[in-house]
Amino acid sequence: MKSKVILITGGSSGIGKAIGLHLKEKGYTIYGTTRDKKKYPSFSEFPLLEMDVRNIETIKKAVAVVLERESRIDVLVNNAGIGITGPMEETPQEEIIKAFATNFNGPLSVINEVLPAMRNQKNGLIVNITSIAGYMGLPYRGIYSASKAALELVTESYRLETKSFGIKFTTLAPGDFATNIASGRYHTPVYENSPYRSMYKTTLEAIDADVDSGGDPIEVGKKIAKIIETKNPKPHYMVGSFIQKFSLTLKSILPGLWFEKLLEKHNGN
Image (tube, rainbow, N blue to C red):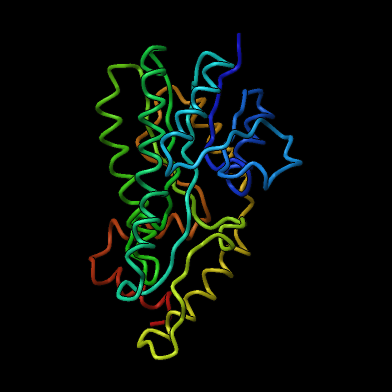
């Protein structure tokens, strides 16, 4: 039986690359995407296709290449994304638009390009990589949280709309993992005269420390493999440390003001 064909956006590094490597070991046929192949001249782990999720023509071209070579796409892992930090009041509107273009609008464009092929196959699985941060409005990460929360929600809509075609949708929300996401993140400058200066600076340092000490991203790949092998995937999954996942349990059971106090304490407010 021919192995399943899996397309992973943002597959050249970090979590995307880890997912691809683990699934390749499991025997799947992997294609990854990157915005600029020239940055990865020695990448040989699996085929890399050039795709910018903000550019529909590059999406169409990459999907067409996979379909031409393999005649099908069994699984799409929407992993490409960017980080963004800053006080809500000071984050530039143009950067907010860019973040949503990559973290929300982009994945939708890739989904919509893949859906006709999956519908013809009468089966397919789409996994949208969101974030545990998307379950709460974290201070100085509000735009990132909002973009991932939006993707989380529309996945439920897609799931209901495409179920009769044999297509399955789910999300996977990772916590902190040791990747290079900080290097590509936009962060609003820490302005000397900003009323948020002290707290924002402290939060930035804590975010970078959390990423540096995060778990092995291969754990995300292992979770994806389990989802692929599940007959009827649930709407949402999480992967991360116990405390990160437990924070969502606390949010669901604690009164809103109590949970807010916990967030304030965690962030040093």
